[in-house]
Length: 86
Image (cartoon, rainbow, N blue to C red):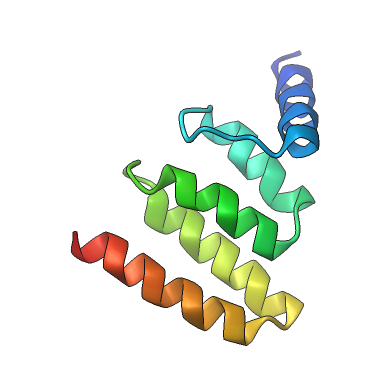
């Protein structure tokens, strides 16, 4: 029944579009399947202080490239590089 709670959380956050960056990782993984890559990147940026930020970024970048948004992904890479340098 834990998966039901995760699905409910994903639906709630996807509808509100308001992640804070402190949510459970499973919520973010659920949103990765649901949100378009541009909106998803805005949500992943909120997790930049988390140790797994790079993992999330790579998944969003992969989804963006699959969607055909290579120019957006290039800009995201510059932003991610700046976060990692800090």
